[in-house]
Amino acid sequence: MPLSITTRNIAVAISERLIAMLQQEVEFARRKSARPIRLEPLYAITLNFNDPHYDPDAGGFHPVEIRLGKLEGQTYTIEYLTDFSYVGMGWDRELAKEIDFDFTANLCEVRYCPPIALSRMTGLYQQVEANFLEYHRTGVFRVTVTWEF
Image 1: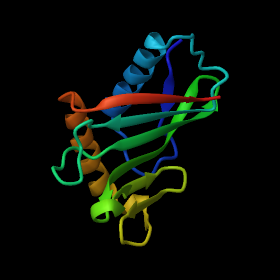
Image 2: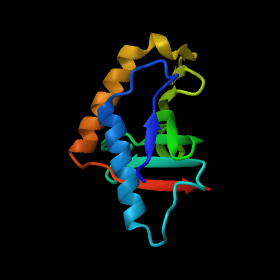
Image 3: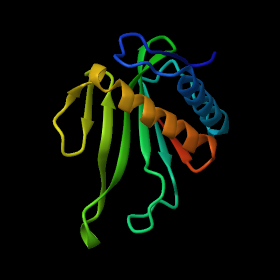
């Protein structure tokens, strides 16, 4: 039975295109898994989208992490969508949150800014989602799925 993703109680509109892509990535990961993955015992699924060529000096596409939390049965909700980028210089560089859309808390955090109500960040969310989906469509990301039992 396919994974169901609901967007009820989320303060911004999540596109059907994003939902469909997440369902496809989860199903693909389930099929290629060395052992059968059943959705019933899972409580969360985390998807990491990484550009293997992303480099603090040369640039590239920011890594994105999306977590799906179980509501009931095989129905999940998107808990967060986080965009990461490098911060620091030289040996002290690390990946840090650039933009974090926390759908469970209805907050958006942008680096160096205080948290803002998600309902006030609709435009930014739509732009980030559209860009992410376009980058995904072009195949720049390597996708890793973590099953949380």
